Image (cartoon, rainbow over all chains, first blue to last red; front, side, top):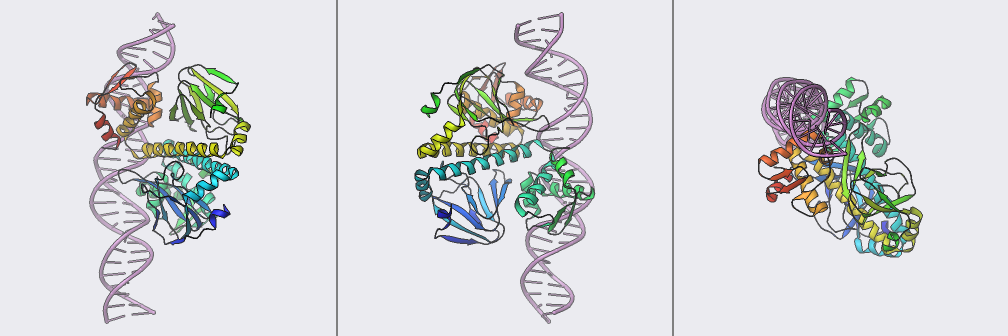
Length: 204
Length: 204
DNA sequence: GAGAGTAGAATTGACATATATCAATCAGCC
DNA sequence: GGCTGATTGATATATGTCAATTCTACTCTC
């Protein structure tokens, strides 16, 4: 991985800039070195789903690269992002030579797959409160690693992470706030009663 | 792949029997040699999602095996299924030695991932008619490879493939029939107007 | 540097509608 | 002749849509 990271083509993206665009074709893949970005799948009818957020030291294959060279999702910078572009030939060479690396990549890939599975289950089988709870727990535990966490995502983006409209997301959040489970101010969310939130996530 | 296929532990499953059970742990993975099976993810509240059907010559990793040894979905036989169990050590050995194999497996894995992505998009962003259309096109093009195709799945199972209740599935099918887009008898479905069905799939 | 203006996001409310739920009836099958 | 699955209907509810309002951040001017 270090071998891949120490590449030349280092690029800086500003918030809002598109790092990878869905349905385009490239022979490069991207390695995030610093920052936060969103991975979203664009639907046919203008609806998007944010599959996950990615931060430091993350490999962005965007679905393609290994099976085909088409990008299957769009990756957009949320903060300033530093990343490097690596020629996929370089990856292929490494794969052919180093079976340990191939094994690790396979593991990584597998983990992605499972993550997507749980997203799928969550989005298709839970009611709104459960999905909102999932989003909040994901943000706290896997992205910000802090409890009152400060965000700079729009409500629209939160909604796209939760598979609903922004209005519905806002209403759901308000209910959680009224119930005393969370506390929110402009750019900050605090989870006050995590056990209850987990209970809601498991569909109460 | 042939090396893996020529294993000793050959097992026959009858329709309805569980080949792999979600949340169990094994150090074996399964290779389908013959038959048809459904791969479903069991939700917490009794709702299931059938992720896909699998037929001849398919590797069932069930999510785990490479990253952990926990099965993340349940696989159930729909017809009589012949398959073989392979010790995962054997796979790991092969991976370590043969980088070409690792590469192929990575490709395979990647394809699975993309398939799941499109399922996710379909289930979360489309209305019922679009989801039903997706299911029908999937069955015709990727599973049965025939136009009037004969099935032996229950309406409940079709519904679980389409992310809805069986009642909703039946109603949706009826509408398609009334519109002259499909024709259905007891165990057979014929797609009469495929272009229109594709249009519906793309959310009309 | 302070205030007015403005563009975009957040919020709220009323309403429409997709879809689930529940119960009843019907059909095919051993 | 009953049992399971399919179908239909009536109804409830979750969620989306649309429009109106408020809030916030930022720019421009003086």
